[in-house]
Image (cartoon, rainbow, N blue to C red):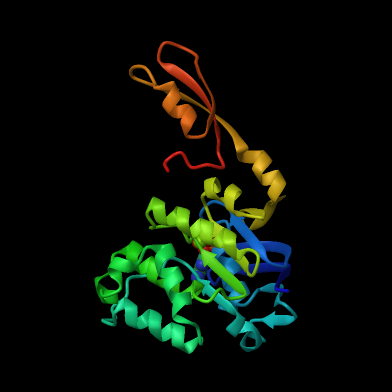
Length: 268
Ligand code: ADP
Ligand code: MG
């Protein structure tokens, strides 16, 4: 059973920036755990500590019983991570070649690769070279490398950034499916997607944990949201009701109050 523990962890970067202040958290078993917080709240720092890319200034980080980064070699083969949005690549190798190389190194079947290619919608970019890819296409390629073969512990930093909405939807469904077999820890500054996807959400602010919610609490918290919109002209109320709007009321000559199910994304 995968386990990630931070025990009284502080991280001060050179230059004196305090990124984490005495953070303790323990994540055990499979499922999707989201780190949620604004830019600069310490999400990426936590992921880097867990992979052993950086060391804590104070406190301890464990993956299972292995202390990170000291015992990183013992657990690294069970982990997979995409940390921070990758910069474009200068390599001229083709996407297909890279993915197939990773597949063979990991001893995976062709079907494992095929599945992740369709989840991420990569069919049309397989013959492109890495240096020809757009930001979103490169992001897909890196995600495919990380997710292929469903590693036991997966750390994803802002996985949905730069992806188009249909891919966001398929990826979140895929991650949701993986929660039976893997521990997925993802960092995001977008609360919208967290509720539908996560079994637990840990909320960070200024390097501290300010909230920790289980699945039921999460759904409760965001299921019903209310917005007031100003319009030019009449809204087609029936069209709104079909896409997850719970209630829509005209409250003025050009204003409506919409209560919607925030666990659905109205764009799809
Ligand atoms: P998040 O991922 O939530 O946006 P980060 O963990 O990347 O936040 O950063 C937390 C804080 O640490 C920010 O104030 C950031 O500027 C600072 N920070 C991150 N990495 C470094 C670094 N290598 N050197 C100095 N400061 C850093
Ligand atoms: Mg970050």
